[in-house]
Amino acid sequence: MRAPVARAAWAWGLSASCHRGVSNFPVPPPAAVNVVELLRGATAEEEEPGAAIARRAPGQYSVLLFPGQGSQVVGMGRGLLGYPRVRELYDAARHVLGYDLLELSLHGPQEDLDRTVHCQPAVFVASLAAVEKLHHLQPAVIENCVAAAGFSVGEFAALVFAGAMEFSEGLYAVKVRAEAMQEASEAVPSGMLSVLGQPQSKFTAACLEAQKHCKSLGIESPVCEVASYLFPDGRVISGHLEALRFLQKNSSRYHFRRTKMLPVSGGFHTRLMEPAVEPLAQVLKAVDVRKPLVSVYSNVSGSRYLHPRHIRQLLGQQVVSPVKWEQTMHAIYERKKGTEFPRTFEVGPGQQLGSILRSCNLQAWKGYSHVDVLWSGEDPDMDLDPSESPR
Image (cartoon, rainbow, N blue to C red; front, side, top):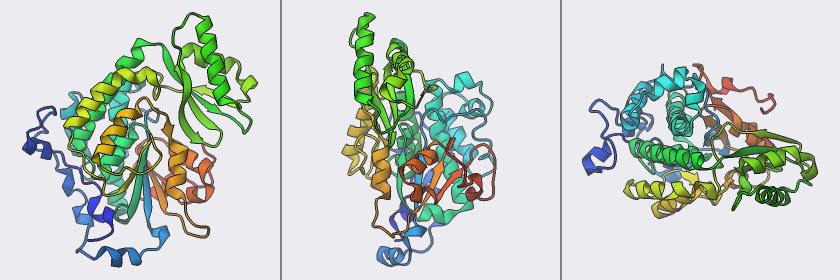
């Protein structure tokens, strides 16, 4: 065999669940692509893994990053439709979801696409379709991938890419997750606040004082806590809207340089999402989860998944746990001084993960590229000028 990912990447499969008789999942239409075949053409004759690995310098390896909710934009997918099998992915998604995801992604309206119940599946499918584009343009990137990570819902796409679950089942799990999170977010006025701080910023103290403010308004058991660790001094804080407004109004007291409300409907990755845990846990029990054949890093722990039970456990916890993205970036790119970094590709809408990588590890970011989902390009390396400032 070749390096692990050469055999593993895109070990999807839209039809296998039909043969196992898993009644919980919609059966893909007879014409749906069996995505297990998508990359088989990219794997040449079998080789011994040791020999294949020995021939590759560290800079020849690649890492794939999958974005999360908030990166969606009307028009995403337009730059992917010219590549083989992308329309078949969207056709299969329509069967699983019960609505035309491609039409919504291409034409919106934005307010409908922004709804949690829609944007999570939309980002999931667009990201995996972007992998198809990358495979078509640079198959060696897929063959030499050694690690993948996804931000929040992007973690499901990373696991599907790595062969830990099939496309249809992964998408169905995302559908259930999105519906449950949408329902939970509608129960309590809540949201997420992006905070750019500085070394002296007092995140913990700020959250505690915001909770006290909410209690003074009569809000019982107020929530205000760090929901995402993005990069040094960069955090996302989730909780009751009154708590987030308090932080914005008093940002200078806590040495926050900038705050911005995110376009999401709820206080994700906090205990406000507890109603979503059980529906997701139940659907994950029915999913055929396998050990990833490419290293996939967990948002909850910041380290690699070890086995299928580990995946089910942490994916269920993820919706109420902070995203340890900064820790994940350190784990993926940690290496001895002088060792070359792998190339990094962000597959999906937006370039937020590239901007975060730049703040976490400038040297690793120099090998970053973005696979555009809005416009068709002949070379993913042309989609981002490394000299651009992060957005």
